[in-house]
Amino acid sequence: MFQLRCTVRDCQQLLEQRERDLVCPDNHHFDQAKQGYWNLLQPQDKKSKNPGDSQDAVLARHRWLQRRHSIPLIETLRGWLAVKDPEANQRTLDLGCGEGSFGPALFSNVADSYCGIDLSKRAIKLAARGWPDATWVLANADRVLPAADQSVQRVISLFGRRPVSEIHRVLLPGGICVVAVPGEDDLIELREQVQQAGHRRSRWEMIADEMSHAGLEVADQKHWHSNVKLEPDAIADALAMTYRGVRHSQKIRLDALQTMNVTLSADLLLLRRT
Ligand SMILES: C[S@@+](CC[C@H](N)C(=O)[O-])C[C@H]1O[C@@H](n2cnc3c(N)ncnc32)[C@H](O)[C@@H]1O
Ligand SMILES: [Zn+2]
Image (cartoon, rainbow, N blue to C red):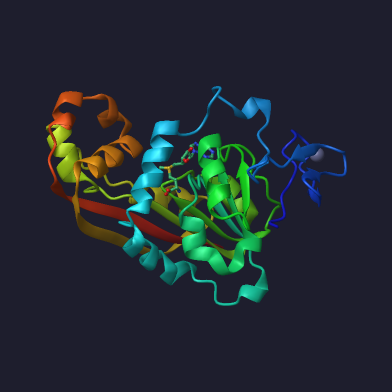
């Protein structure tokens, strides 16, 4: 399995697997949940009783990804992430992995060296059920990541978390970080209809600046774009899994939505640790 580090404050030693638990040299224990994930969450890491995305948002994302609209996005990411030498045991950390569809789609040949982290118990349970051979961790990716310094070849953040200095710490020199964020026209038709004004906001340039200041150089950038016809149930899921502002507003207009053509888009960044 993926080599993890103890998350007890000021410990951070490597964990060793013993049957269904992980233990560090100072005897801090972490049990494996019956669904197969590891709970490395410390009490101070939880902001609420059910931290991370809500159950509704996680399940909406799960149904959405099962509709396979993201297959072309996965194909685009494969160009940067394909593991050419599965024997090399190069580790991949997925920050805010959610319900876990992207991991097996991109790294199915290297389950031993993949680890997905999410703060939502509902999400990590689904992820562990979908790909039991990989390592799944319930933890707060905005705190200290449960991986040793310079031990990871790839960090991915697909619409997930971006703790920049921690990403830099865990990456090996020359290691890569792949970031995906919604494009400015993502679901624009839907947002225009529901909010009666779709705000366009491009985020990737700001993220690229922030990451290059922290020692992660932009090596490539792509804009992924697709147009899909969505039925009302897919529209409801698309809104439930994104755009918090839209979710709670204009419920009446949302109920009146018909099948419509919608733009999906994402900005993708490939960064390299110098
Ligand atoms: C928009 S979803 C993306 C999930 C997945 N990467 C995907 O593309 O399907 C963002 C995820 O980040 C998780 N998340 C939010 N805050 C987090 C944190 N501090 N640490 C780890 N995960 C977090 C949420 O629970 C949610 O599953
Ligand atoms: Zn420890």
